[in-house]
Image 1 (cartoon, protein in one colour):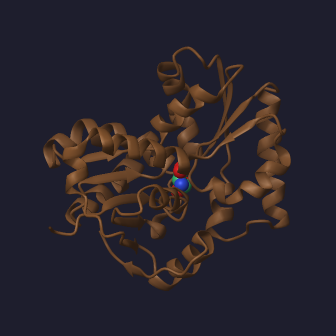
Image 2 (cartoon, rainbow, N blue to C red):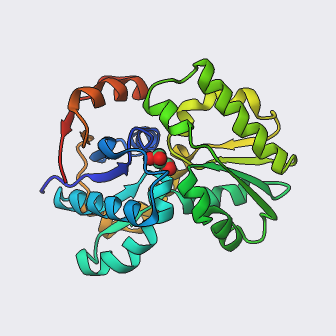
Length: 275
Ligand code: DGL
């Protein structure tokens, strides 16, 4: 059987927080992680550009024989997923699948929230797209009564530049969290709506009241994907299962390997690619 991994895409390192959980839940599956590190961040880019870059990445992962691609990036899920699913996939490869991280997170939030007050922390792109408030309204079965959002434009650069825990990082994290609680002091659920943010969890926890639940996406996406594959055996059959995990980046191989090791807690080998 030709090697056919699950493609996992992010603009940079953030998607590694999702990959880590996917590998834990589906240890037999092969994975190919692709980080567009050379063009990160996506969060401040226009709808058109995020769509263009994400589509290039999806086409590339298809060329690597991925039958299933996970956009492990909220910005790409918010700005490109719908177009890709509705306009491109039917022409490109109708039997392949591209899934995002927003829908599974919303289903989980609907299960968790008690008072229906939800906060979303995300990139400027994700916040401006209004994807979370719209989708929460649509899919939470009336359980979410209020959604407030906060764009955290400094958080991705903090992660990408490995400033985690620095004085500057703490300043921006506190500032954004205080600001979202000023918008709604009753938030019982806070979504980390960017896959980079779990890497800042230790700092985030310092400023969030203990009774507010913080939703990280990695485990949720992994749980929902297991379920999805069980319901789609024809797709599941196409994924090869040798437990192989590969890493590719549009940036330099060395740069990726150094940082990915920091985020994953283990050494990885990466390949530099163009698309
Ligand atoms: N990790 C991405 C997300 O979940 C995007 C970060 C960025 O490129 O701005 O939104």
